[in-house]
Length: 223
Image 1 (cartoon, rainbow, N blue to C red):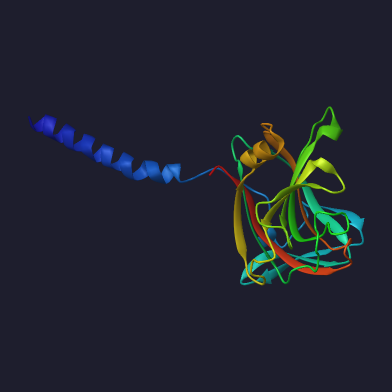
Image 2 (image 1 turned 135 degrees about the vertical axis):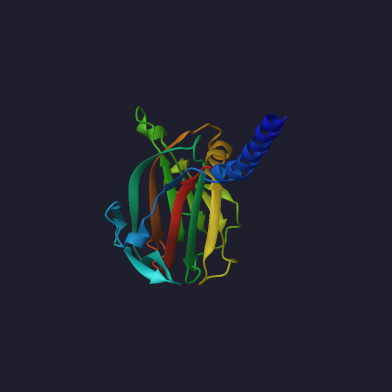
């Protein structure tokens, strides 16, 4: 009987440990970092200019490292090629802020296709490149949040998605989380599994305006 009691107590203790430990293990979700701005380096990003040069640099803002973008009637981006399996890490997380709203009436037109902040995700079709798909998460001006529309230059293979709009407060951080797998499915009607590249862009070339924006904490996650 003494042996049975000792074994039973050990079993209870083991079960108690499993209850305490398992949630902690489950909480360690898989994440894939996109930005390493805390290293104060942009070596893993490439620059692409469309018109002029948006100035990108890492600064300290609100006690954290952030990517500052300054656009003066310019359109250029930072991008990196990175392979993301959305079946494993479907959520894109990031923080951003803008100093002021752009003076644009119709951002769904070619003349108004400027955004103080945008994050661009590309899924490439290696056999038929013209069938590649892309989604732009943008900080819109007058378009309502959650509105989706085709890019006026690229058509329906590149879709714009208003995450923030002109009624959101400026000069403060906003943190976002999007299920990219679901967004692509809802927008394109396809199960697009992989992301092949990501770009950050602040552009004001079409409206000849100016914008100061900031980005931080970009990563993909399991939940």
